[in-house]
Image (cartoon, rainbow, N blue to C red; front, side, top):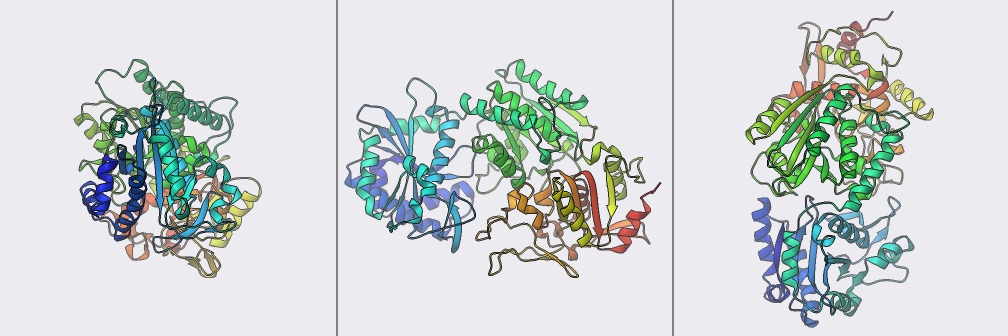
Length: 635
């Protein structure tokens, strides 16, 4: 998808006549169904004119130009892509990132970032060279026109900050950015001639529309080099200890057991028989928390990519996906996606689409991705030859999440898929205790099970504590011993979007004298060094200092889990049923749902099930605490 594609002559004319911004505004509305912000429209009007003036003065009229070109299966858009041939008739394309900055500062938070005024405030953003370089690597690794054939198109990248002037010892030229600057130069207001020379050296012989067409028609498929790199990294992680996904050290690859192995063999058998035929397959893998769904997905991703299959791993959780990307490295980004990424995918473009936490599939895809108007699950089924749904029917915790095994089966059959369905029973979390997860479900009246009482087992303990301080003290003690551990809570307090004057998170969670902050809000900047971004709360060491909610904890495991059970869900001893209290919730999406009681039950089911060795709980409501105590037998 792009908002504009045409010749540089036409691009120049649109700018000279002050028509480019209105054209892009109209196309934006067609794509996304709402108006572009005034700031974005103004940036189009200002930045694109500056670039078009350079092209016009350089006599570059025969180039291909794309504006706001969306990276395939990504929500990111490239400002400008210019293509043409050099003096030796070699095909080239240049990615140009346009910025209206006039100054910036360094940040202690991340070496790849600087602080500048954007979006109405000072924010931490990627250095332009790093940002545009990442875009180039993404395209280079995933679009066949840039790596296949006898004469693939060669990519280059740079940024143009037309309002910026380098100062002595300028932040953008700091030594920490030197490697990126050498490869992806930054041109400022004082470097118009240098930018013109850079562009001319790559594409001055023109013939750009032909190359532009090749790029737009290019197939989306990761290069063999990328597939091998990702496969190698995943295998290394599976051989080691990756506790976030519930695995233990093993001498070789993670060993799949029983139903896990059946699922794995089913997928590998399907792809082994060839995917050239038109028949589509959907594999629905049901299992509660800790039954190894993520393990199956990661093992399949490693082995499929090793065999050069175009396999993607998608989830509906930013925290889970971004943490996985961080663990597996930047090269994995183009294979680790979100459910919303596939609306624009061509039919059967992906060989195997592995969808973890498929219960988080939404009704429809929205911005920053173009909506097809179809159900999101239909977009996903359309994109892949083989669709693997890893799902827990009792982990829906948010309004609008409509993934269920029955719903997915219905839609898969309607699209002509051959459907396979498997149940995972073996428990790899909670010390391998199936009894604990069954007991939680029965106690919360989610489903009836045979386990109506809990008795501590050698490998797993459940402990009710008298205060949130006691929960945190126990969790910190385990971290000090080298274990992974976190404290989570029901969404029963507001979640501040600002910092205090010292760059600290606001202590929103207050229970008497106990005061702690939630993990950082998504997109929050200016935090002191050591506070992890929201998506890394479960993984970063600094996460121990904040309270996590279900959205940052779901999908992760810890050796020890601490839970603060709030007042949004209480047990009524007079009626012997659970009751939901939306007025005690600060989760706006959930509190407005007609399914509030079920969603909040599912929330605590998720939080109570995060521990591998033990779960420590503090109950704010004492009737609820007494009920839980009555379901525990001490031998």
